[in-house]
Length: 255
Image 1 (cartoon, rainbow, N blue to C red):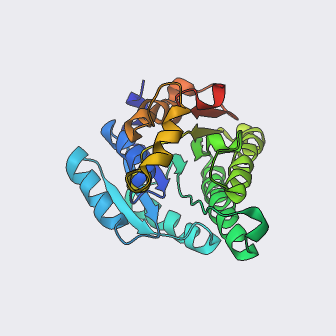
Image 2 (cartoon, rainbow, N blue to C red; image 1 turned 90 degrees about the vertical axis):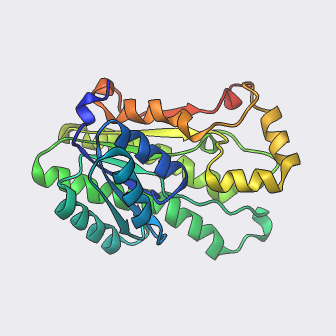
């Protein structure tokens, strides 16, 4: 299914750790060359570990997805070191909880800037390069089941709005860029045990149990549960799939 990914260059934002790094690992495992982009200093060491573990070329790049200039610079550097990217995974994202009546504008804007504007800017930089080179490409945006349902008991209106925006952005770009040969899809995870989420659930076991009780499969997702889906969407096996947001949540949103 994924043999066509061997040697292709994949850019992964939010790739220093968590689900971004996990998805980058899935692509490295099948032979893709990986450019990790992140604000965190550890992005370089994460890239080095991928290269050592899977024998693929990698690069770790410091980049701010809310800055078009920073994103463009990182894409240029990735191209110089690895070759032209043909795959983009947008995994950079944040959530900030808070009652909407008390939420300040700066906090709202920060979530929108990273999750929605940041996704657009990286898609734009990728799309421009594909258009200029006349080459096809694949984009996988990381949305959330929170684009479709309101999670409880936490209050996170800005997160819901940003991820709903990512879903519609995915559809809009899929239609607009289909003539360019660029497929655009989204993955909408439910509750997943990323590094940060695992730390939170260990510190708040009662809330974690409440979440698990609402998931028909009876558990939160593990990062590896995304491997098959992300590899499929990035490969030619999904050549006729575009404009979709695929929920992977243990049936949380089915009830």
